[in-house]
Image (cartoon, rainbow, N blue to C red; front, side, top):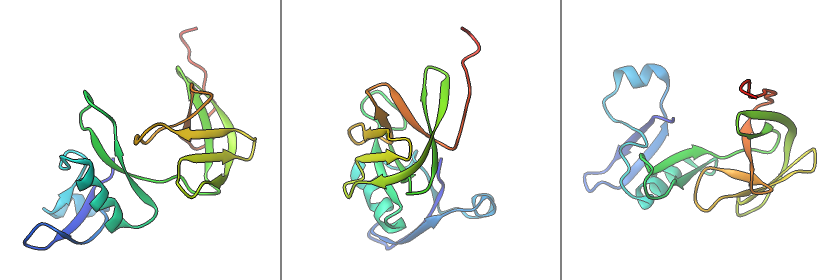
Length: 140
């Protein structure tokens, strides 16, 4: 979860924003997180203030907190694909579409963003996860 230092005008519009360090979280009182944004537009405003490397997400009805701001995957990031407790390394990100909806890896897998969520899926089942992770679900 990101904690963000947001500086606002008196009318509530954003002057600037940056990701808070651990020390800032302890000492500053103007920290915002996904628990503070009550609309997708509010999360989009914070993401826009942070810059192009961040985007707003909407997890949908019945999920709390519903709105969030996440760092976008970047070309060169090591990634894995995961399902049901299993995860397997699948190379690095080689290409991201201009719309940020399609991600391709060095092993040839293509992941598609699910609606406005922060999740990208391959073949409708496998989720993109950060880092090279090889882990088997021990319950089988």
